[in-house]
Amino acid sequence: MMLYDPFEVFIALAIPLGLLQCFFGYRLLMATMAMTGFLLFGAISSALMSVFTERALPILCAGIIGGVGGAVLLVAAHIVGVFVLGGAVGALVGGVLQARFPALASRFAIPFLVLAGGLAAALLRRHALIVFTSVLGSWLAVAGTLHFVAGVEFIPEIGIWETWPPRLRWSALLAWMFLAICGLIGQCRSTTP
Image 1 (cartoon, rainbow, N blue to C red):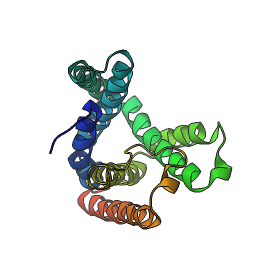
Image 2 (image 1 turned 120 degrees about the vertical axis):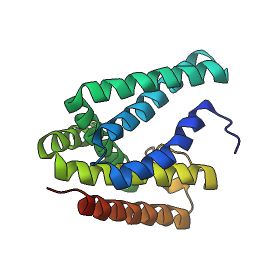
Image 3 (image 1 turned 30 degrees about the vertical axis):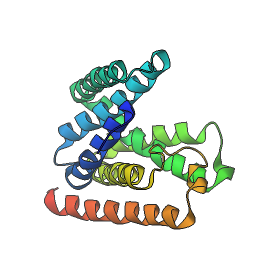
Image 4 (image 1 turned 60 degrees about the horizontal axis):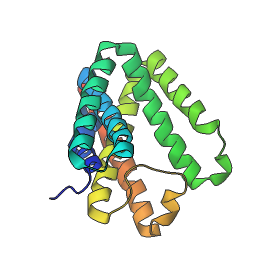
């Protein structure tokens, strides 16, 4: 497989890391936070570097350096990592809800869901983290697979679901829900209270 964009390296990594997070996210919480930090900060760093240059090597290097820094940050500051993990799920759910229900589009909806997800993860810990890692990991795996198989955009933007063919839209949603439920069941069975 040929990766044409430096950002696609992070998308390719998101598939196996998403599956690992989906099925073992709570059990491997520190690794889950490191993966989330690497993917999140790596993608942000490579996107920022792409503003300054179009050359692939500097963009990839910036993404790797930013990703490693993000991984270290989220693991070193454990509660911040838990909050960011919950906030990422809140942002994901907010983006999907706004894409599906445009009437919800307000400047406060996604920040509110990010804050609510972060607080839920920080306060409810085990139960919230099992649900959140299942949901986030399954989305990473499904969205990454769809990017390479069907050529769809990886990051959900407002209205992007409407640009997909209806069959693909519902297939993606069902695959995401199925994988999240399987991950949730697997994590609940493998972790003891």
